[in-house]
Each structure stands twice: as structure tokens, then as C-alpha cells.
Image 1 (cartoon, rainbow, N blue to C red):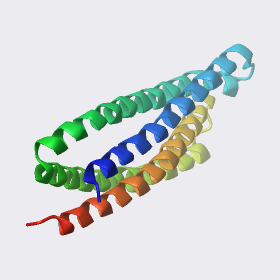
Image 2: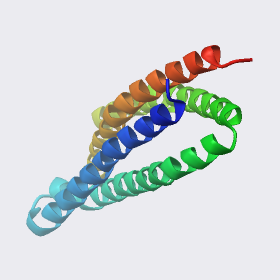
Image 3: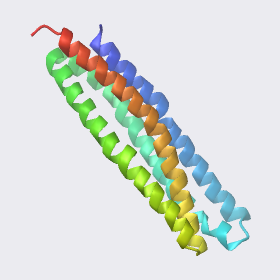
Image 4: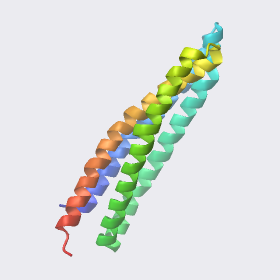
Length: 170
């Protein structure tokens, strides 16, 4: 099994996934523009700022993740060629930390925030609050959807790393 190939394949898969943040960010920003141009009601006008902010956040997240994973590919090769054992240990540690972050943030905090936003929609009747909460729900669902598939990839990559560790000579 080629550890460098597994690491590179994982990073390349992330490069395919992270632009979806940017695409959804652009869609949210286009929606904001649409509400700004054609929104006539109070609720339609209330969506302008929240969708612009959510779109900007999603775009920035996608851009940051894309850049990080793009640079990681070349760093993988240098670190692997320098010291394979240290590379493997560092990758196992990074994958485990990422899995813990997913568990805490993506699969615990985000669902709690989704529930709170949904409850807020029931009780807050002002257009700006409703628009903000509904936009937040949309943004969080996008994050949950994309990060759900990213979680599956890093979990599989972590399994590959652990089996490489078992197969490595001690």
C-alpha cells in the first residue's frame, strides 16, 4: 500500500468537495442580489443582508479549505520523503483530531443550532429575524451536507492510516 498515494488521493478528493462551499456561497450571494433587485415585501427585503453574509461565509470557507488542501498535497510529498514514520504518525494524529472536530462541531453543535433556529422561527415574528434564521438554517444544512461526505472520506482515510501503521515494521 502506498501511503503517499492514499494521502494525496484524500487531499484531491477534498479539492473536488470544497468548491461546493464556494458554489453555494455564490448561490446565496446571487439570491441576495435577487432580493435586493426584486424584493418588494418586508420579508423579501429582510433576506438581503443575511443571504449576503451567509454566502460570503460559505465562499470564504470553501476558498480557505481549497487553498489548504491544495498546499497540503505538495507538503505531503515533502514530509513523506523526509520521514515516512513521522509522516504517518502526524497524519494519524491530524485525522483523529479532525474526526473529533467533526463529532463536536458538525454532528453535535450544528444540529443543536439548527433546532434553536427552527424554534426561533416559531417564536420570532419580525421579518428580519425570520429571514436571518431561515438563511442560517440553509447555510447550516449546506455545511452539514458537505461535511457529512467529508467526514466519510476522512474516516476511510484514517482506517487506511491505521492499517498502514499496523503493517509498518516496528
